[in-house]
Length: 314
Image 1 (cartoon, rainbow, N blue to C red):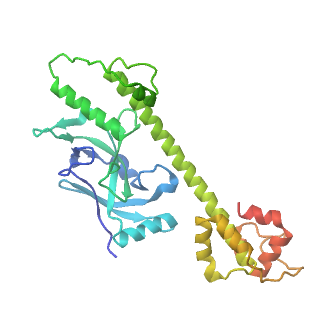
Image 2 (cartoon, one colour):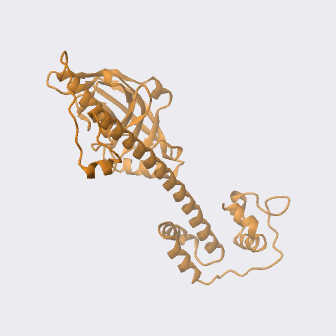
Image 3 (cartoon, rainbow, N blue to C red):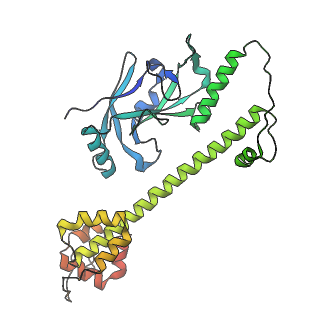
């Protein structure tokens, strides 16, 4: 099947932050050296699903072809969705400075220069995550509100050029003060904006930490589920053809799968004196060696060496 080409940027299209990006102004040096493909802009090793190939600039279009890591199960799943036409969108992660924003005659904004960090496969590229923006000086990830705030400052500067800027006093309700965690009224709009930007950055950090914890728990649950199903298979409770279905059940609801398997009697009878190949001591050193054993040898190893068996599936 021919590779699908993804459009990274079309400078004639306004993005979800209401500005356009000049394709010829996108700096590709960093990205070309590491054309990483992420899932939904999550900056973690687990979210690397491949890389981009045949990156090209054709007029106002910047595009590339996806090269998925087919050895990774998660990447393989997304690759299948792309090949079947269910996922067709991608979005850029760029670093920019608001000084490189230029207002056009029609009042819209055009970003003249930016640096491309990564390009992600995403489900709905037209939403607020269609573009991930980083501050050029701090490399800090900006929230949508921070970007809009920067653009609003540009609008204000344009409107107030060569005039004295008058600061209006802001009066918030008691409920608003409590919601924002303020003890007193902000003296200026800039003070309020700074406080809100701090809150948004804190939320972004906590959201990222939550996602990392969620991924770790998911990995632990998957390992635990596979160990449960493997034990059931060795005991003769389920057949090889039933493994995939039981693994899915255990991943979705471990307690339910555990309870159901507990009610199924074991069919394999153990016998003593089984010699297990694989190492000088007769015991497998890793999961690969364990999987090469016969079912009878696996059961014997589990019964006679419970601690070593558990260590294999940590």
